Picture 1 (cartoon, rainbow, N blue to C red):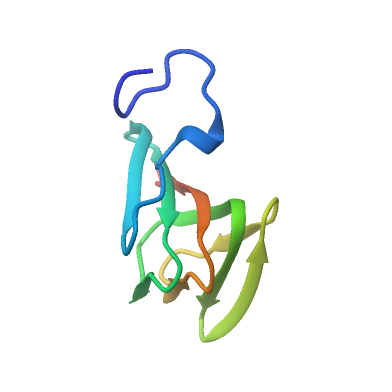
Picture 2 (cartoon, rainbow, N blue to C red):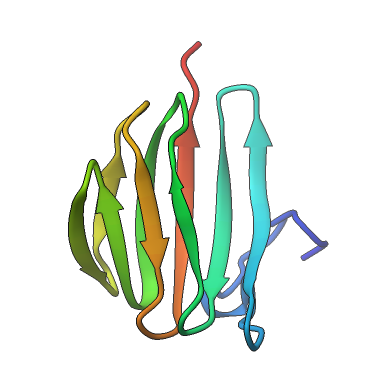
Length: 108
């Protein structure tokens, strides 16, 4: 596997490795129609409220995340998925370490 590319089978646990006091990201796929990015959040880290013009899915691979969408907080755990609608404010917080895939779909 080369940095940022998955050309052969790769373990999800090896993508975007945890780093103390940080959020680590690794873009796995980027095309005109969207991106797939792996993230690892250390406990206590987060992304402040923001919005994007594209639909997105958050897939929790490991741990648990607090994801606020349109002012409603959701506890999202390992193996769960949550949609982030286009144009709706959202934020993520790590009550514990967690790893996720973010899939962003752009309109054609």
